[in-house]
Image (cartoon, rainbow, N blue to C red; front, side, top):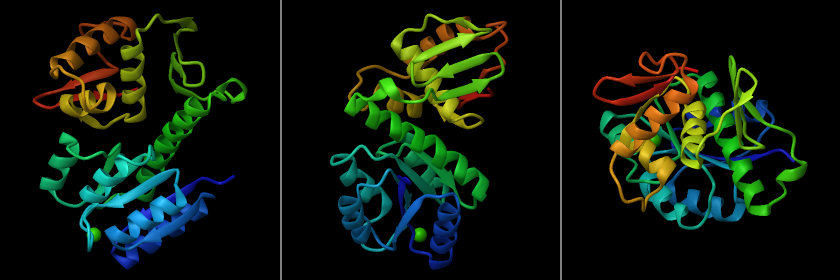
Amino acid sequence: MPETILVVEDEPALQETLAYNLKKEGYTVETAGDGRAALESARRLKPDLLVLDIMLPELDGFEVARILRKEMITPILMLTARDDEIDRVVGLEMGADDYLTKPFSMRELMARVKAQLRRSRLLREELSKESAEAPHETLEFGNLIINLTRGEVTLDGQPLQLKPQEYQLLVFFAEHKGQMLSREFVLERVWGWDYIGDSRTVDVHVRWLRQKIEKDPANPQRIVTVRGGGYRFEG
Ligand code: CA
């Protein structure tokens, strides 16, 4: 069954381009041009992924995300156009799983869409507890291989002993390869809304992870620190 993507974008030309390119990749695509229509379609379709513009008529994307977050686990990929929007998305007051800044290339979009759909599949599998028969999905970065199906990580073919949070953190980094991730964003997405702690939690876990996956943890090549910002996973 092809996966279903709901594209919410009020600019007709961009909506059409997004729908066209996603259909070409084999996805079932529906579109909505304002926030209210987005809510209706999402509730009816229960899509596997929502591509959600922020500046929309009726309800904006933030509001749509806030409402749908309470109703479904569908991942949300937000499209942002302005710096102040990016701040809000990265700060993750709203329930976006990932974001893209306009203008973006279709190649970038597809990479994010695939990452989020993989997440979506895993969530659904987890919920339905049918993962036993699923083919192994892996993320490979040279000698570092993450087996998403089994929840295992190997380095040079040797299994790594990772704590659950270290594993979650690594998978999150891996799915956002090359993207600058603020500590707050990581905390929010990996530890969750109601986690009581601060962003030093992220630093501590990054340090532990580095000791396990970096050749020289003092000079990390995989998880690099972005000055004044957060971290970036280089693969
Ligand atoms: Ca718009």
